[in-house]
Length: 147
Image (cartoon, rainbow, N blue to C red; front, side, top):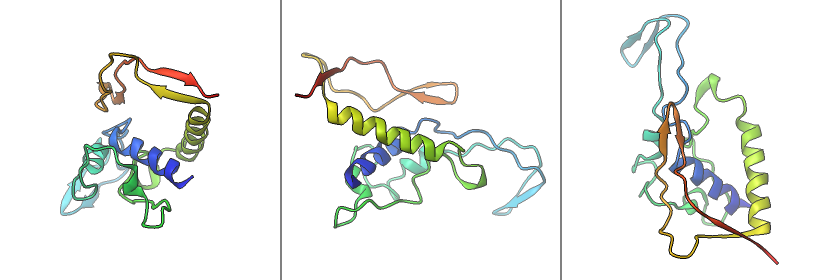
């Protein structure tokens, strides 16, 4: 199952659902890297810029689950993969979302073969921004039951 875990990690990396994170604000004045951040200031973390940084993830526009595997084929966690935000206010549902996503993905892959309809063009990984969410574009896909 390491390749499945790596594939889901790459899905989270290449198309971050909430690219600018959820706004946070310090409860008291805070100093960070020589800057003073007043209490109550809204702060957005650009998760997309981390996930698409070529120094952290070479060829970031290419879908490549192998970047999350070591030479023995074991899953390797990257601290730079932060689709659920970072710090003490990371998404509370992270573990549940990862478990449910894994189970759903495996269930679908075991029972269906997915392919594009005849004459369809390749799918794009570029989403559509709606408020704070990066949603997938509409597309047609055939789910053929496996025998």
